[in-house]
Image (cartoon, chains in turn red, yellow):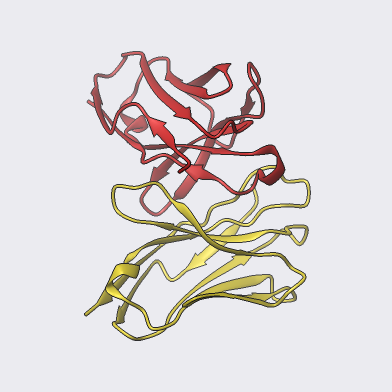
Length: 113
Length: 112
């Protein structure tokens, strides 16, 4: 069974902390994505990657960065967490041949106090 | 920013009834029209999708209806069950646009 695993289900951090959200997929997918989900706003794309060491900005990249050193792992970094980054963060992956068919992890609920 | 408008925001249906969720889009170049289903505590999962070469696709109790001229597509859930209670997202894409554009979501509650 295909799997996208996010390292933490819940995370509580303080304003100004550097936060790392980790995502690992076991499907050998080329494409990986980070979304944030907020009530009434749907899913908004933060960053995505089509290959190792490659990244592209999504719709809301400000305040975030990413790292993809290995094909199976895609990390989201909040350089200096702020309260407006309190949200549900979802990682997803897809294959190059079916890039529009996303497989999602279960999400990380991040609270920044 | 491409616009995708999903309605209604929330929906309550009695068991056995029909649930209908609509999605309107602007980009006429879109060529892939999926619906994702999300249960509480889980990430979204692809439920059903359609390409514009057909006007309707049915998978079990779930049907997508596609209206190209109106730039709309809909999800119909026949004989709705309490287990269908979830949040549903449309997420059209295509035409060189390299990412899915998610609607705001519809929270469906099916009452027994």
